[in-house]
Image (cartoon, rainbow, N blue to C red; front, side):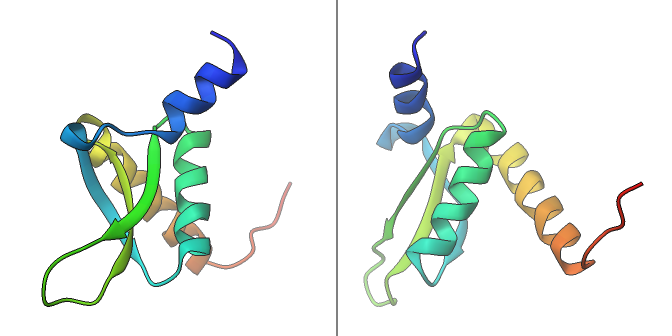
Length: 89
């Protein structure tokens, strides 16, 4: 595969196969999370969740088959971030 095909495959999740794994208040933060998932080989897309009666939120969507792994990766990154800077040996 070439780089353009790889990019498309990691940036698009077919609507019938997608599941929201995390919600954000702003698109920039959602984009960082999606980029992190893509860097780990998981296709991720950022989009608005439209649920009648609720505020619009920004969601990170992945394939349903990748949802558990994506959630675990995002949680691990959040936990490491909360721990603060780490010393490098």
